[in-house]
Image 1: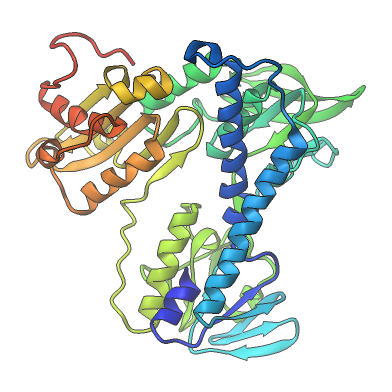
Image 2: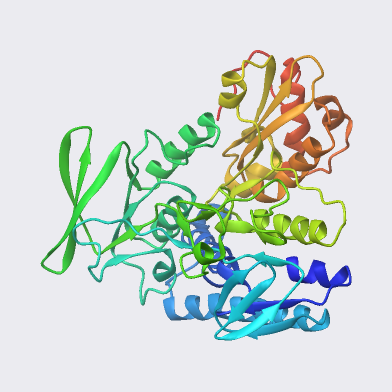
Length: 449
């Protein structure tokens, strides 16, 4: 994104890449994960097709074909990126780059000078240090995308977005899954009400969840792994074929020559200002290597803003309007302020909520499971945050982000005509609920989530 935007603005652009074009998201993150999650959802639909009138005999999983499908999607998109760079006349250099100073980069011994440099080196799965961390069955998210078969059993260490998505995915394929989370709840930072409902839903699907627990050790016990975890002062052992470490990611900054160049960092993260400029003149850093929000769309937006600033244009980046999406079934999506954040800030606010059991399209797609929740200011009725658990949530959240970006009110959501039948119709219903005036829910009846 940054390279193409810079080229559009008339710059001569050079891009250095040591691996596959497209970065983490395209090659070992968002795209391959979502491809397999899509397969998992289709597989479950076929397995449970009787309720829909689909008679599917001998439904079985062809895992090598699943991996081929995943890799074909990735390959197609990588070629698309190559084509876009070529069409925009971006020069691609293959190799490892090191920053040698302001405006100077070394690529495998060859020097390249530039008026501005943008560091966009991404991140790697965070590695925990514990006895047994080097055992063959202890894997990270990259390895988990390329297993020869779905494991019979899996312990997922980390109940964040990555851990929950992999847990949900492999459970759909029949794996016995246990999530081990250090904090009091999974999916920390999301709306607490949604998290509680999702927790119950995951358990109902057969996923075990252990919170306030830490992994202490992994040992081989015969042909399986034995994980010792400590939960509130007592210890238990978990047996599994694989142990997935999904406790987050860390910036890939250790081999960039940052210390020698004089770039300020903190725990490996590059420090930047509001324009994504480092302490060195004309050196920018965007995405996972500098941002605490490690999301592909964050990196893209920051990259565009950085090159626009570098080339003298007015750049806009709205750090408080960043959608977060989780691709389990049903999906989760969130943008803006949570109810918990509004309370911590002592804001005068209202909450509107609409159960998707009152929405026809959601009933068709997921049995009506989930809800939409809107946080709005009490005085001016502006939309402060939107949180969705339900089908199409990851698409619907764009409307919510736009509403916050334009400082829309709940009244403007209500007066916007939404197509029928869509899950999106629930958005104005949730807005109406800030005044207790939903159309498609009986007055006074407690909302069933």
